[in-house]
Amino acid sequence: MKNKAIIKNVGLFLVILFFIASIILIKNVDNLDEMWNFNYARCMANGLVPYKDFSIIVGPFFPMICTIFLKIFGQEMLVTRVLAIILDTTILFIIYKVMSELKIKEFIKYLVLILFAIIMKPYFTIDYNWLNLLILIFIIKLEIRQANLLKDIEQKSLLKLNIKQDLIIGLLAGISIVTKQTTGVLISICVIGYKIIEIRKKQDIIEFIKMAVTRLIGCIIPVLIMVLYLIYNGALNSYVDYCILGISTFSNKISYIQRLIKNDNILIKILSFLPIINIVSFIMYIKNKDKNLLILFCYSIVNLAVSYPIADESHFVVAIVPTVISLGYLINKLKINFKIEIWLKYFLRSIMCIVSVSCILYFGVNIRSKNLNTELEHFKYLPMSEKNIENIKEITNYIESQNENVYILDATAALYMIPIDRYNKNYDMFNKGNLGSKGEERTNKKFKK
Image 1 (cartoon, rainbow, N blue to C red):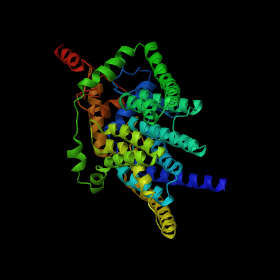
Image 2 (image 1 turned 90 degrees about the horizontal axis):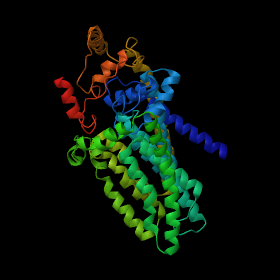
Image 3 (image 1 turned 180 degrees about the vertical axis):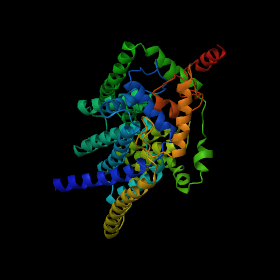
Image 4 (image 1 turned 135 degrees about the horizontal axis):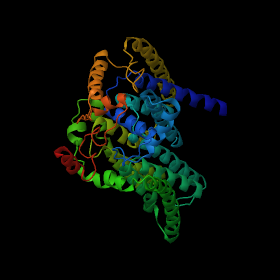
C-alpha cells in the first residue's frame, strides 16, 4: 500500500513537471520579471552585495538560493528556468498534499490542480512571490497536520504547544520575511497570532503565549542571520533605504476592480469574486468549530495581500491559491454519488496524463521551429528571434565601443546589459519605487552633473 502511494505521488509530480517544463522552456526571452530575478542572482554570483552594489527591493534569500545553482551550473538563464520548473511543480504538488491532509475527495483535488494549471500557465516563472507561496503552502500543510493530530487525541482547541512543529512553522515564516519583507511580515503576524481566536479560558492564554513565543523565536532566526549578513557586508543602511524607506516612493498601482473584476478572461473574472468565500469559511468555522476552516481563512486573507497594490493577473494567480483550496474544502462537504466520484477521479486523472504527454509532444515539435540563441551570453539555448538578437547585438556593440559609460534609462536595460556583463545600479531597473527613499533626488543630481 505504501509503495502504491509512493508510485502515485511520483507519477503526479512527473505529470505536473512535464506540463510546466513544456511551457517554461519554450518561452521567448521577453519577461522582464524573469530577467530582473536572474540578474539579481547573477550579480550576487559575481560578488556584488545586494542593496549596496545593486538595486533590489525585496529580501536577499531568493537570489541567494539561485546564486548557488548559477555558480555550480553556470550563469545562464536556462539554469533559473530549470529552477522555475522545480519551484512551480513543487507548489502544485504541495497544494495536492495540502488537500490530502484536508481529506478532500480525489476528483476535487484534480479539479483544483487543473484550474491552477489553466490560470497559472501564462505566468509560470522564477519569482520571489512564487517562493513565498511555496513557503505559505508548506505552513498551511503543517498547521492542518497539527490540527488533525489534536483532533485525534480529542483536543478541542488548536492551542497545544508542539515545540518542534511550532519552531519549524516560525522558521518558515522568518524565511518568508527575508524573501519578501512585506508579505513575509503579514505571514509571520498570522503565524504568531492567529490562534488568539481560539482562546476560551485562562489555560488557553498560557498555551497561546508559549506557542507564540516559540514561533516568534523561529521567525527571528532567519531575520537575524540576514541582518548579520548585511552588517558584515556593510549593506544594512542600504537595505533599510531600499526595502523599508523606499517602499513609500512606490506608486505603481493597478485597480482590483478595473483589472480583475472587469477582466476579459471569464475565468479570472469569476475567480476575482472568490475572496467572498473566505467570509463563508469563517462563518462555517464559528458554526461548526472546524479548525481547518480557521487555518484556511486566516492564511487566505493574508495571501490576498500579494495582489496589493498591483492587482494584475500574475499577482492574482498567486494570491488566490489558499482561497481556492478553501473552496475545494467546502465543496468536499457536499454529498455526491460514490460511482460518479470514482468515474470523475479516473476521468480527470486520465485528462491530466493526456494533457501532460500532449504538452511534451507539442514542445518537441515547436522547439524545432524556434530560433535558439547561441550568440548572446547568459541567454544561450533559449528561444529568441533573430531580429531580437540582432537588435541586442547592435545596441551592446554601441555600448562597448564608447569610451564613457552608457546608461539605458528604461525597464528593459537588463536585456542589453546582461549579455555584456555590466550592471549599473539604479539605472538597470529604472522604475519608480526601485531607487530607494531618495532615489529620484539622487538620480536628478547625478543627471545635472
